[in-house]
Image (tube, rainbow, N blue to C red; front, side):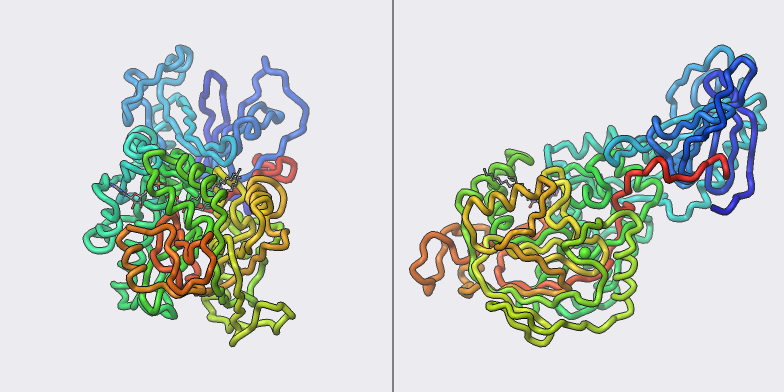
Length: 572
Ligand SMILES: CCCCCCCCCCCCC/C=C/[C@@H](O)[C@H](COP(=O)(O)O)NC(=O)CCCCCCCCCCCCCCC
Ligand SMILES: Nc1ncnc2c1ncn2[C@@H]1O[C@H](COP(=O)(O)OP(=O)(O)O)[C@@H](O)[C@H]1O
Ligand SMILES: [Ca+2]
């Protein structure tokens, strides 16, 4: 790492010990000054990563001169001067000053910064430095503030939508108690809208919201609420740019505003898979530091008519039936999915149809890789670049698969399926921390198409259970997975208009069997598509992936640091 010029360096008091405090453009460090009384330890420095703040137990470095710490400037949340006599000036939180420092070091300032806690959680930590002179204290505060102002990726004005009925109906409380105080601390102004009905946020974003006034939009809720934000923003962007969403082949215009998710839903899979945990404080801190993570979006069409966008799971069969059943049990909260999951597992319906797909052959990565999409993912960067260059699709020649054929680069597979799932990202969530497709990528322009053919209940259970263990859920004879750019599904028996009407009006006949359906009475002719937690009435759909269409206030899941490999901060 290039050596950065020092902006400030002073000896300041911290918890009654003297520290050498130093600030450059990337790092704030403080290192205890050895006093005669203190036993000086040996010359061994523990490694310590620059620009990266570890959990407490890792971050402290007992070097020659005592404890040293470092915080990346990009992860400083705020700095405020303390009025030693009357507590803090800015946030009203009264802090008692130690006797010794008030006498000798009567001026103080507090730096709030991101601290990494267990399992990808971030927390806001405070450190208070005491100065001998007021001018020095002000110089520190001012210099750190200038550094923060120079971070242009940080949002200053946010539009926040809260779904008061998502998850355990705690959205408003979570926002008020855990998130709003952090936004205030970081001097972010907000306009908060508590939604009054489903699609309120979507419609407001699409038509009314004065988006120019904001640096980002935030939703407090679950995947359904996030989906509303995506629909509002993507539709608005296409309309503003004259792009017709109804054309399945149309290249969509990416959205400029970033979306933040404060998890307060039932599955929270998008938050979990982009941050590593569904924790409101962690998400708020990712928003404050101005993180950006691009994400693929799938568009779903039926007969050249736009239906919906999807960012996580498009599931027909098992996940469609779980969702359709669980919607009637919303009163159960997040447990509805387990209940309906169990029930759907027992019903064991399969569905006949044809899946056609365009394999993504020109890219890096396969769905069976051991590597995972993580912060700064190379595969997403590489494949995103390919996509923007509009590289031609190349398709391999026909392997001898009996029920599949190739047609103009498309592969066609007919069969009886328990589940057809398209995972545009891993779909990791607390139920399955590795997700439906553990090696899927957030922003590589592809989706992983998982076909689970008709099999015994026992085998399907084995497949499901593997989502929760280290065993490969794709390594089963009745499961196949393909990384694709587009796909289509056509049910074997076509849906009549009256059947579609019934579904669209929400009066789904669960045991509907097409009149010309043959003797089978145990499985219905159609399932529904679960599109990020919304039910689609049409069984026949066409799906295309739009690479990196939206951006989130996230950075992807961070690798847990390997202690031994990290450089020494004291070298900065
Ligand atoms: C036996 C244990 C099997 C565990 C299998 C877990 C796989 C979970 C993968 C979940 C992928 C979720 C993708 C995200 C979907 C969300 O967009 C969407 C909406 O979320 P929101 O309500 O927060 O707005 N969520 C969902 O559609 C929920 C899907 C959850 C499915 C849970 C299925 C549980 C299955 C339990 C089977 C039990 C069989 C037991 C037999 C003895
Ligand atoms: N004020 C509201 N009243 C009723 N439904 C709402 C409201 N705001 C949003 N919704 C809808 O609630 C559904 C579920 O929201 P979500 O936040 O995803 O929670 P969950 O994860 O529990 O499903 C979404 O489809 C969303 O459109
Ligand atoms: Ca993807």
